[in-house]
Length: 100
Image (cartoon, rainbow, N blue to C red; front, top):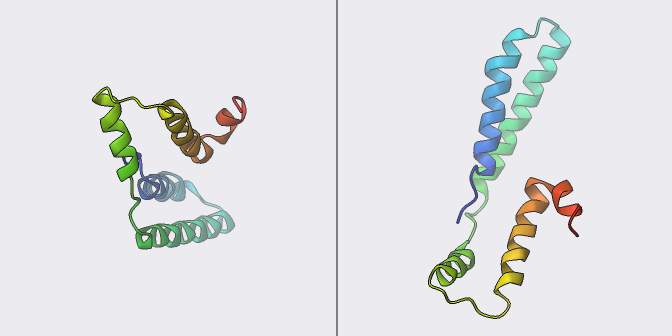
């Protein structure tokens, strides 16, 4: 149930875009320096992400398996909503705020 793209994949995509498409177009030395600083900071973030332990999604996998098997217990909808809300708080908090 791991979410895709992962935080590292997102950071990598940003890094590739900035380094490959934006940096080469910067003629202003100040902006170029600031972009290099930003890319270095993004590299630090990626290395920090790599040090984190992998997310334990066993509970979500078990829930999904039970739902697929038709074992929908009391409280399942609330559990699913809580999981979706947790992911939305990261991915799109403004979307979630409209429904709280």
